[in-house]
Length: 126
Length: 111
View 1 (tube, one colour):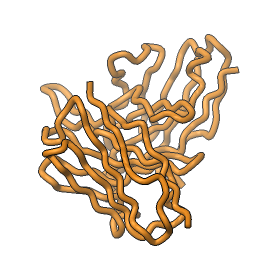
View 2 (cartoon, one colour):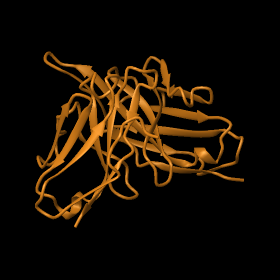
View 3 (cartoon, one colour):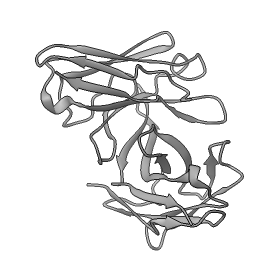
């Protein structure tokens, strides 16, 4: 059973950099067909996709956050990480890491966020 | 404002059926069969209940079903149970540079 677990500071000061790590167990971040993702949810609001990273290290970012976001992969620790710079109160949210499974069988193709971490609340405040 | 439009709330009595809509465009919902639905209880992570428009992951009740017509996807829950009370979110791949979009969420109340 694949499990994901977020870790990192729960409080970040405005203008500083938010850093979170997701540790994957029961599966490998080096496997193909998976994009390792970050998604956030401001308190009382909906979900927003932030970015994902492939096992090769290639990344895709939400254009609304692209100038402030960076993802990295540590295959030796089976982890991937998020850095979000110049944070403001608007970045206060529960941050989830998730696995996006993508592929095709002989008859159909699939694309789904099938495993999620429990989420971690990050508050931006001085 | 979310990229996909969902009703803010729906309600139904135990045993009844309800349907939640998710409206997008030809660049997302209408253009691809990559629509997912998630159930989220308070304080919990979203749980995948429907993928690729109508596929139900192993372990998900067959009371949950998905469909799509044009630019609108739908989630139907039949035989409503108290445990179904939660927020529901749709998600779609998009051919725009955003790649993945979500609906604003729908609060389901079981009366």
